[in-house]
Image (cartoon, rainbow, N blue to C red; front, side, top):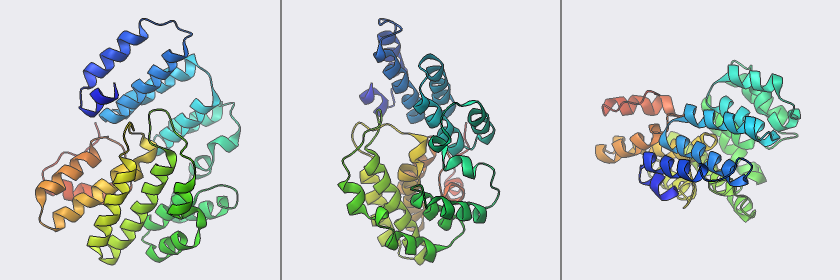
Length: 277
């Protein structure tokens, strides 16, 4: 199934899942795992709404708090705040499983977001979010200072943690490393150090594109953002074919990511269709 998905053979992968699910009992744990696989295939295919629908079905059939928390984070990430709020109201999960997203749900400005994230940082690991919040409002120095001062953002510390695998995904520590390298790349890009930025984005992708890893919208900044910036850099270098390849990949998942508005302008110059379907 994984190999079929990586070759873009979505129909064949789905048919394989359907045939296996049809031959096992409803109570077999494998049925749930195949459902998760199907959801991740939809994310990989660039159909996040269908992936969410599959996860909603799983939540009804296999009631577990982790599903609700994961769905909440997905809705929040995809900008469906109404659905995220509805899930928050009816959930029986302890609030701690929904933070810090629940604290950010009704904020209207990046400045408010930074203020809340600073407060949350006393209890929760939100440093990566805070970095991207700084980058969003072009506070490059604050972002760089945080990267240098927070030991939990040090790649040696992150990669020393035994990888905790998510279902059909890359090790969480690899995705986190990719996000940090991406943030560093953006800072260098803004400084005008395009070659250094390019190296950092390429290194970020080496961590994000691990074997046997399927895409999750929660890790858009570890995979889609570096591709988008590489596309912009190659466009500035006059290498339009390379720029087109990276930008097509970045927008293929139909998921919002940091830098997508800026990258969209470059993609449109290359006559790429980047609107979400």
